[in-house]
Amino acid sequence: MIAVSERVPGHGRTPHQTIWHKPAVGHRCTGACDFHPIACSEEEGIVAPAPKQDVPIRLTKENEAWCTDYLNLHRQR
Image 1: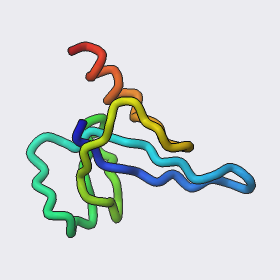
Image 2 (image 1 turned 180 degrees about the vertical axis):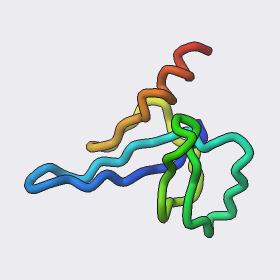
Image 3 (image 1 turned 120 degrees about the horizontal axis):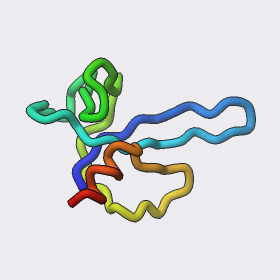
């Protein structure tokens, strides 16, 4: 699934977490973007993002999760 990552900083002893989001429709990323709009929010997005990536639905790395809205879209298919 094509996704963009959001790094959520941990606090204290809590490790950082990566949340994967569906990019907003129509956003053309060249990998040099300062902001990615995301499909689950019209107001929010990811600042200083990484480029879009193809990410497996079953995440294997620790501290990674899918955006709940993206998972719900995938399950409806």
